[in-house]
Length: 69
Image (cartoon, rainbow, N blue to C red; front, side):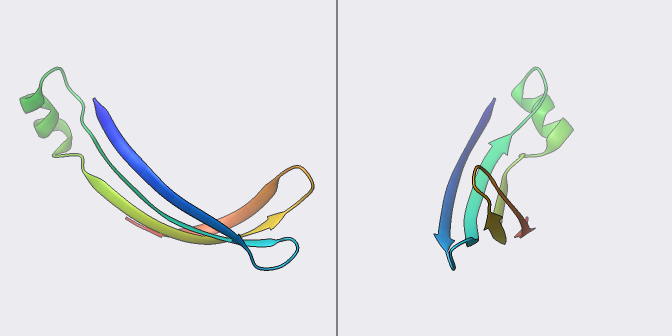
């Protein structure tokens, strides 16, 4: 079983440049039962924030980001 959520924002800082940022959180476990899931992967909880810069082309955009887990 898995659970998660994402908050994401994107803003144009020039005609083609964008800045992005957000927060991702969730929980994930593996195994055939709850006790085995904790043995294999701990609680599986995580939270990650990120920020990045990108460049917009006509039909797509590219960029790079940095995150903290």
